Image 1 (cartoon, rainbow, N blue to C red):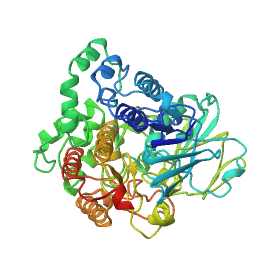
Image 2: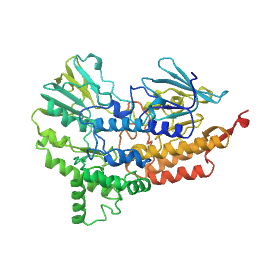
Image 3: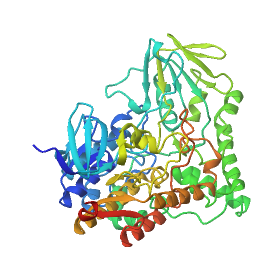
Image 4: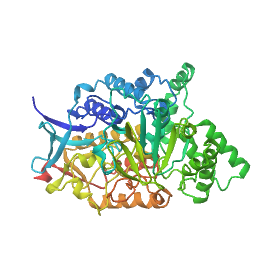
Length: 537
């Protein structure tokens, strides 16, 4: 059997499922390679206790098919990991894409063959594929990061990363457990782990702004209403700034009278979910407005946590939303439990991991289990692990080497890497949107592009360096006009030791981005260099 395909897709999460479906529907031969044993992407591996989506379920799904949308009913306002994984298997089965997928297959390299104008893909098992187009659907948050603590391998107990949790149950009952990290996975898992642990020690580097999820069961009546409003929900998602079917606030926190402002904050706090970060329209750009909202959240933390020393360590002192906004269920309440202890790493940093636990600058904590809730090498980490080699043998890692800027065109392509596409790649709206909405836009744009190339007998497509530089500058200029670049976070890459600091998310809005991409395609793929077979010869 031939191992040549029109397209190789890497990854079988949301991106891989839809891209595989579209390619097959459009008449292209496609093989999708996935290193895990099944579909699901991050939702197949991040099975830690309390793992939930922070986008509301009814819009955290595929919206391109009304039939598919109507066949599935979510049980919760914010779906848990296991339900999202069931949904993705359901979608893959309904779309009949698993026959184009090969699981337990990790890509070890992908090299551009200039002479044959195709990609050579090699797996870790030594299997070889070739393809005209290489499409990455690996996502922005799929490479787990564990800081290089001294002695990490000496620990005699069990240790787990939230982003690579075992598929079999982990026995937490009655154990002494240390959780390192209080980002999203830490905030979700800590209350759940506290229910089982005999003692729980939370090692916190940076306190988090969180707002309540207010998760609940979705009634049959609500599901019926959501299905009936499919067209309206989809229309609002497409027209929205961040891919959510909600109307954005038009009011400034500073410009709103205090009594009205407080009422608005209380109302969105009680409503729960990510909408709290959109209570006002200038939280992300106006320091004074941000201070007002930040102080409101700090007041809620003070009301909740009883221990005065603990509460002081839990109060964030950076701009709200400039780290990933987190929604929680009983996170701060957990610190009122007698068997839960917060260790502020700014006061007593971790010195080393020992055989029996964690040694800080002040004392050693004896543990049975260490949970690393230390996040991901976001945006570029997984792409670089693929060992992608472009024209003239230049690797993507070399192109984006330390000290150089990461540059893409639209977050969709990279100069020097012909016929290579990245779904929700660096410098696209990606993680600051409802990600399935961004994925659908990217997949559909790539699909239209490949059909255009086929129709016009174009052999290769590649961004020009000039277009890439201009887009990267535009992304950074927008980011610098906000508060996002004022805070160290995984958005900027500062959570990874030695990683060049930047900001790899387009902040102009998914609706604006959608129009930009549409205009570029309408202008004959402006900013791209297109070559026919004759031109290559």
